[in-house]
Length: 383
Image 1: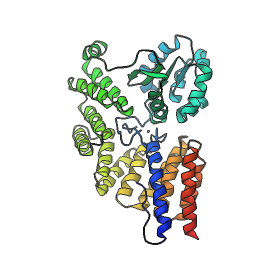
Image 2: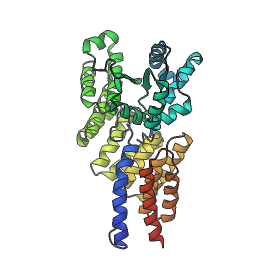
Image 3: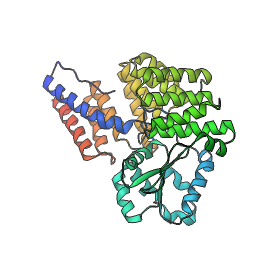
Image 4: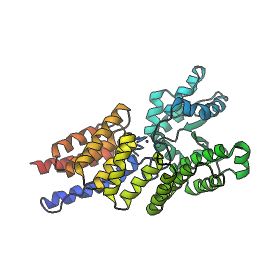
């Protein structure tokens, strides 16, 4: 995905640039991975791609109000009953009754907190939130992962709607028993859907063993076979088992050719297995039918794997345009675009993309420093 400068002309400069690219790769991969849950994200914060390594099932796409209203409202109503401050993901704010709006952050505060956990912790010291309710979409995963490692918060609930965290000392979440799930969801189809979606959300948190337990329960219902297979494929992908992920994705597509989650994982697996040309052919169809941030990111990845630099740059430009329209963080995708331009010998365009990346508010000082070093070496080559 990242360029590897030639070691022939200007060898010293290129070796230095390669070193910088390798440094950049770590933070960019982390920032851009999308739990590609069918996408469903560089949520794409860039979710670009929650994570493209953990392709799960239908998460990159923001839910509609109708899709979220039924499961989200009861959870919110229960949390608001205490009448104490509550933190919620930006997309949940629309469901907060006007009389309770003072208990939750503003949209600007919520957006800032999910993008920058340090902002959340500063706000927490002032407001003392009773609980945190986060969506499973890419934009909220940075804060979710920070809370998982925090000694002050415990994961209290996981459901298809997302995650609830409470202050440490509260009861922590654990996989439900089959008997409990059968009692709450007596209809097999509803039970399977709940188990599969909850498992997908667990994969995003890196709780793979717990996700696997729920998928085993879901299999006993014999319902939603394509969704079950694509989520199992996502689980295999999250473990780096790409051949297995590809097999499961292919089986899922046999049962439902319209399963976008399965198609996404299939493409990602083809890339990881070194079959770039095949990946590019498949992802073009995916983008044609569903041109979102996840599919465009995959198109860029596949084009890179197939050494099609022009299509890679085109996909990244479309990705940046769409991200700007959706008010998504652009630092990671602009950095990737700058590297693509540099690889293609378009140093002027590379410098312009890097300059815009530096201005992205979500980047850290260290990340900006890396980009500036890249710009210095590209500028030196232009002389």
